[in-house]
Image (tube, rainbow, N blue to C red; front, side, top):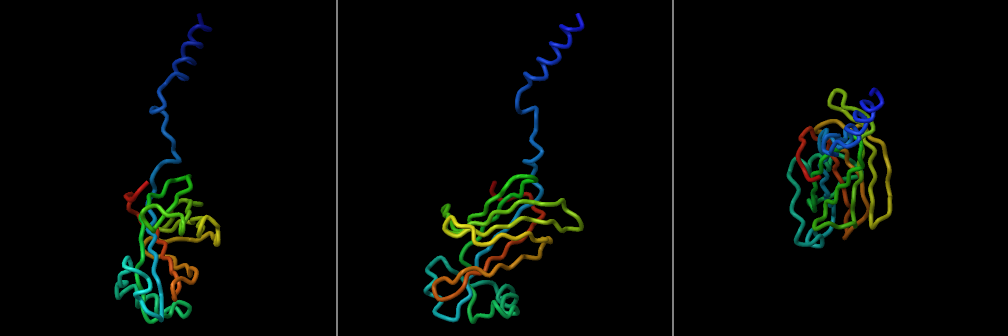
Length: 168
């Protein structure tokens, strides 16, 4: 009798639908916003029709950094992705989906005082060109100096956000 009861309990536990077992790694713990800027001293028209002037606040912030000092700043692309607790996440700022420039990010710690450690990688044309472990704080974007492009240089702003929206 005890054996039948044990087998029945075991069978019911194994036969539960998959939806009953939630994957804690898929919990959305925030989001990451990626914006791609072009800093140039040349003709801004070379960036193409997609480029638009960066906001005055961003231009002022970028100009304060010695290595990012240019006469003109343009916003080229942006992406906003959900941040999963324990999964790799990818941002593809240039849409439609392009693998020319991608950012991979994965949480390495829990959120403490609005700060979280993220493992970040910058990929260009399917080649990893940068890997870093950064302490990210809400509202304070990490600026990454990218490669030269069309007479200027790409600048990436990666920002941790408490919003749980964005694309999966």
